[in-house]
Amino acid sequence: MLAIYKKEMRAYFTSIVGYLFLAFFLALIGLYFYAQNLYSGSPNFGYALGGVMMFFILLVPMVTMRIMAEENKQKTDQLLYTSPISVTRIILGKYLSILSMFGIVMLITCFYPVMLSQYGTVNFKQSYACILAFFLMGAAYMAIGLFISALTESQAFAAIMTFVVVIISVFASQIAVLLPTGAKTAWLIFSVLLLGLAGISYAVMHNITVSIVIAIITELALFILYQAKPDALDGAVLNVFGWFSISDRFTDFVYGEFAVSAVVYYISYCVLFVFLTIQAVKKRRWS
Image 1 (cartoon, rainbow, N blue to C red):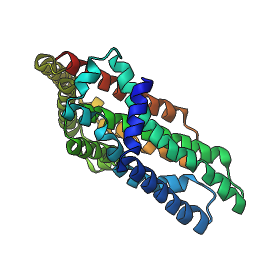
Image 2: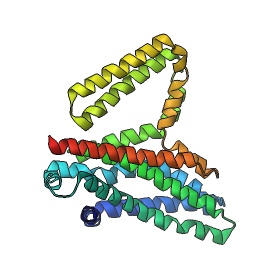
Image 3: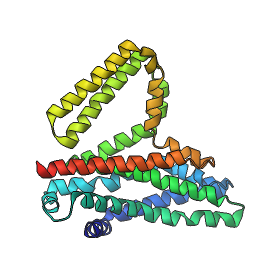
Image 4: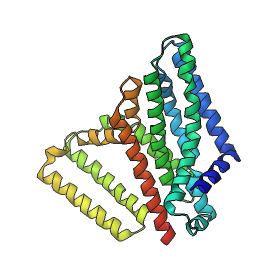
């Protein structure tokens, strides 16, 4: 795992990608730190991180698009899969390299509350809780990007799909508010989502039979629920879309609430998508 980690870190710093990520991200944080904290006089460093969030979704695809897709395209993945290193260690080594790139930025960011304290009183607990939450949120997004990159040979496609998924998760709550809340609408939306789940299962397992069975069973169960107890679906769209909104959890930290549930939520996302990536790669290995 250490060898894979070193290889990936070397790849970032022998190309322009790593330097662009670090420079652009630090420049954004510095700009929002000046605008939200120094110029506006706010002692809450979470406001600066909240402002950076929208630009951060552009950086996630940039740093994750090549992590697996490049190996698939150049067929060097076969060398990895036939090595004595387990797939789990390969994926963890790659994922940790992405987190290290992100961690370098967040480590430098830890000095901003200290600088801000020179101009007034700063709530360090809240500031560093926001930094921790922002790091975990980024780790969740990067786990999603890692998974998408493992499904394709095209870095451009991986970047576009990661961007689409991330942007949907950012605006999930706002999208849900615009949708009707009736049971019929919920049934239609959930039907589409379940078909998407079947598609993900096929991407991971490459087994069309299992994917079709999953689609039939879940769609049938949803139809039975809709027919038997439609009231159970009223307002369910808002709840489900809210659950998928990764960025919304960060808001609690910005306003001074250390939400343990949000920490567990982010870690669960990381574990889930790293696990899915491992399963997808294992399936490719034995195909």
